Figure 1 (cartoon, helix red, strand yellow):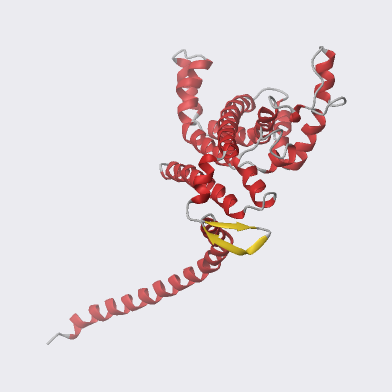
Figure 2 (tube, helix red, strand yellow):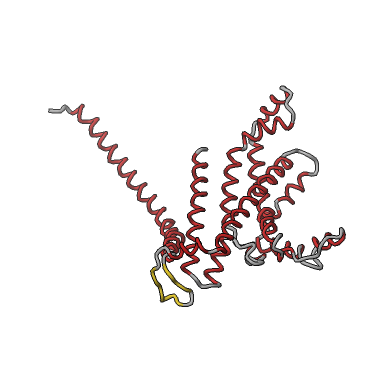
Length: 309
């Protein structure tokens, strides 16, 4: 038979267990209650349309006759393999993504190195350099369309002063894709520069002072101190900008609509064209599903990089 002085600690443990169980249960239900609305919203806004689009990609369906749906299996995906415009759009998407991300990173790195210096007159330049980042894409396209307009555009006026051509630059096969790539770069370079500059400013100044004592020059300090310490942020920015560039639609559609002769057609504009101009909803969903798979790969890389911090 247990004595009273031995039962008392057990009773206290039991009470503590009951109290902790009540607290845990209460906290758990509060957490579930907070998560449920966001989860439901995400299911309605993101998950359902995504799953629905994948399901439609296996059907023949037109926007003109939404009630007529026919199961075609992988026929839409087989058509993609034989579609020269899709192949062109995919290659041009890769060109735009690689060109924009490489140019954006190099310009952003150069701008970050300049802006972090405590030179006189750099204060206003820091503010001005961020302007393109906050301008809406529609306004960016209008500004550059005006500057590149034939006859009275600023670029053409300068070109004619030096004996150059006078042309509608967005309407030329050679220049259309590099120009829409330039629009993407012009908008996001400040974003990359801010992130890199913040990373550079977190590097302890003692590293540079020790390097100076050892006789290191600017280039050596950049190579052996700055670059290794901004590697993580650089990789994050490259992956983020890769996803954004690969998903380009708005500026390209406003500037060229995918033309001339499909020379600026990318996967984003091709999905729109097939869905809302050709009314081929099933085929457009197949193109969108291909984009989803490729963007998922980039997203997984981004999450892996986040986990390595």
